Length: 143
Image 1: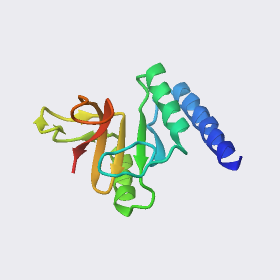
Image 2: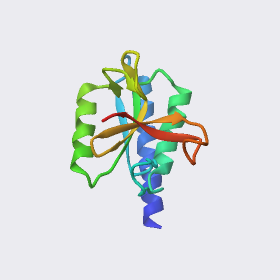
Image 3: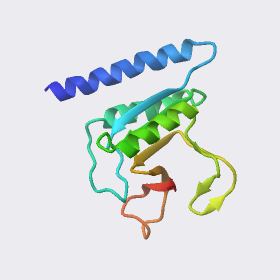
């Protein structure tokens, strides 16, 4: 099917980019952007179309933890989400300057992956089963 071929082509391209990045004397940030792949509690829509690409980037983060590689899940139909992504790419980091994580202010919070929904940046957090239906949920980092 055409969608499956396109998904595999995206992963093959990402592999080429990451291998190139690893060969550089000073690696440049690579942003892997997907569309509604990660479920966020505030939004019931999600898609598995880019799940393989998200998983590939996660595997790269495990294999080469020092690479500046970021997973960013967006709602391509939301202008706020796209503007937020552009700001993150310009800042060259996926972080909250004030360290706001579930009400704690402990300094800058650096992340490797996030889901942008509207004006909120959501990051994965392990939560109890009483708090969520999934063991790992995307929770708001900043709003």
